[in-house]
Image (tube, rainbow, N blue to C red):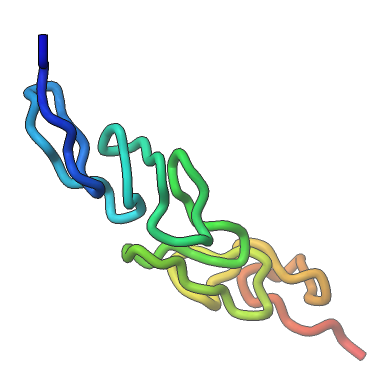
Length: 99
C-alpha cells in the first residue's frame, strides 16, 4: 500500500503525509530536526551545526569566526574559546599575550 509520495529535496514528509520544508540548515532531511544533507560544507549531519571556527547566523551558510576565536557564537568576534595564540582566560575578548 502506498502511504505517500516522496517529497522533493528540501522537504520531508510529516505524519499527515504532507511535505514540510526542511530546516534552513538542511538540503535534505527526514524530519524538522534530522538532516541527511547540510546546506553548507561547514556543517555536519545529522543536526548540521556549524564546525568549529564558524557560527550559525540563522542562514544556510555558516559564518567564519574572527581570527582571535577558535569557536564563536552569535557574532564573529563573540568568542566561546580563543585561538591557540591568544590569552584564553579572558573570553570573549581573547587579546594577544603581553610582550
